[in-house]
Image (cartoon, rainbow, N blue to C red; front, side, top):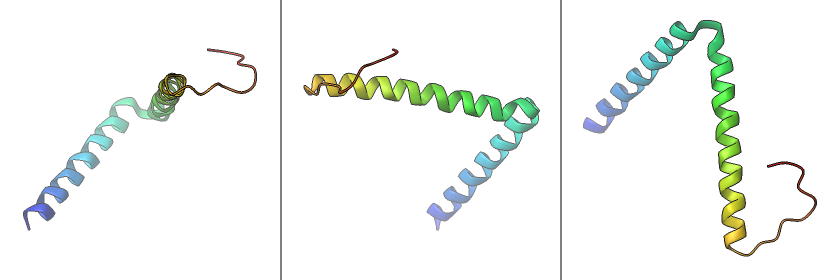
Length: 66
């Protein structure tokens, strides 16, 4: 029972946070979300490349950036 209540409270807090986010940023909210996703993907790609180099993998093909 307490897990259900905790889950419900967490869902309500997330919904409230999302509503405040969109209310505060308005039409720029989607641009911010896309920017955060792009930056996250770039950092994750760099982290994975570094990890592959540590494991001894050699990248195939020509690297054109980064």
